[in-house]
Image (tube, rainbow, N blue to C red):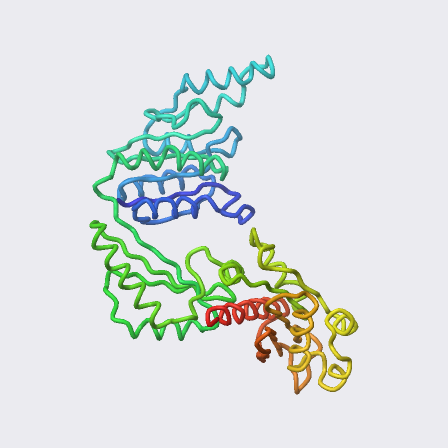
Amino acid sequence: MRVEIIAIGDELTSGRILNTTSGFAARQLFEAGYEIYAMHTIGDTPALIGEALKRAIERVDAVLVTGGLGMTDDDLTNEAVSMALNRPTMPNLEVLANIRRHLDSITSAPVGQLEKLAWLPEGAEVLNPGSRMAGYMLVHDGTPVYFLPGVPRQMKQLLVEHVLPSLATWGNDHKLSTYQRIFRIFNLPEAEVNRRINTLDLNKAAHIGYYPVFPEVHLSLTIRDREAENAEKLFTSCKKAIDTVLGDAIYGHDRDDMETIVGQLLHEHNLQLAVGESCTGGLIAQRITNVPGSSRYFLGGVVSYANSLKTAYLGVDQRLIDQHGAVSREVAEAMASGVLMKSGADIGLAVTGIAGPEGGTEEKPVGTVYVGIATPGGNWVSKFQFDGDRQQIREMTAQTALDLVRKYLLQS
């Protein structure tokens, strides 16, 4: 069953307001087994609204329209529908009565401008008459068309509670069984991910998408089939094939993030982590503590931005800094060892580097970063040369440091 989504509003086409409703609707409909044929964003122009609506009704099985249902002068969806589909507007007595009861409780003034909310195109069926949310469905030439408010909270509620159940009665025999997984990949360029996937002889029904989301690459696998058993078998075999060629570059799936995965591994191993940060300025600690329950495995950290704090709080020997510089393998190792000893953690993680845009030298250019890990069983340091602006280098450093902890835990 094919569905077309139309979002209406000058605030959307001007870029003043981000169109989040279409994305939410597409995701919900896709996961429910429907095919999204097209998505449009158009302004508050009746002729354009009518044109888009008539074109959609002719080519899809259902249409979803959001926005333009309010009481102000620029809310023109109902008028556009009336003209385009030759359905004169008329008052919905139930909605009108609800408006009157609401106003009676707060004022004795006439219904006035709110009355506009009750005038709907002929044949409209209100989705939730008892609520204060505009939204209705009408059937035109056998095609159900759903009109929802542009207010995200209201739109989402009506979509989930009313539109999806209604659609299920229209096209149950046409729904596709859908299996989808997002592979979250780090430290492997998109081109290399693509090359490895191309070595697989995947079934043509397996749809692969590549999405660079700095500093990661996301790969989507989608299988859709009218037979659930066929779709599930193909999905399982494709997942295994992708896991094989990408290996531990895949750190998580779907809505996972690096800090959540690292936290899960720390908790599983019953280990605690502490961090010493310089160039990241506390970003690693912030990301870790964004995860609920992180106090079980994260003790805390030291933002030793100045060298004096490296010596005072992490026990770094000033002679190491004088001889090798704050950005060096020796200092990164000393920072990791220091935070391990001072905190009593099982793993000490430290980063020091040059985030720029100034501070680089020919020997140590901007983007030079050292990541140190200290454990009771030994210490090691990794050197990196990152590209990008200051924020990108900081984000890459934090992500890389967490990824190194992840890989260490996977081998433990």
